[in-house]
Length: 136
Image 1 (cartoon, rainbow, N blue to C red):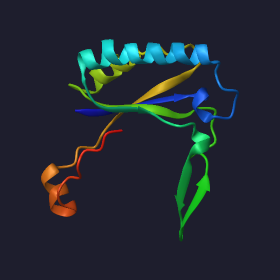
Image 2 (image 1 turned 120 degrees about the vertical axis):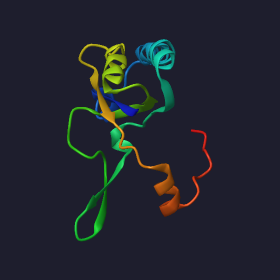
Image 3 (image 1 turned 45 degrees about the vertical axis):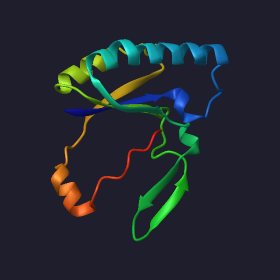
Image 4 (image 1 turned 135 degrees about the horizontal axis):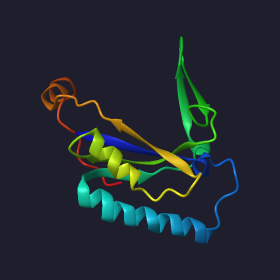
């Protein structure tokens, strides 16, 4: 089963003061330790990446025409800051892995969302061959 772990937090909005370098480095170190000791030890990490703050985003809204607006999808105190796409046994295992993340108190949350599995044969039939893998 493929599951997305979506990391949300107030630091990802880009609206407040940036964290001091030492505090940011401590969070990064804990994050990478979690990836090594929890995720990679218990699931297959398909991809994981941090995102720029939400203020760097562009949002496309659809009505009669598609319009582009600066900023995040919704007005909120938290914004998506990064993600992992993992492969694991089931949603319960994914939730347990997410619960082990060393999130600082009050910093944010992790949304655990199953991915809809599309039939690879149908994808090839409609889209064609898979694109070459691109390193992030």
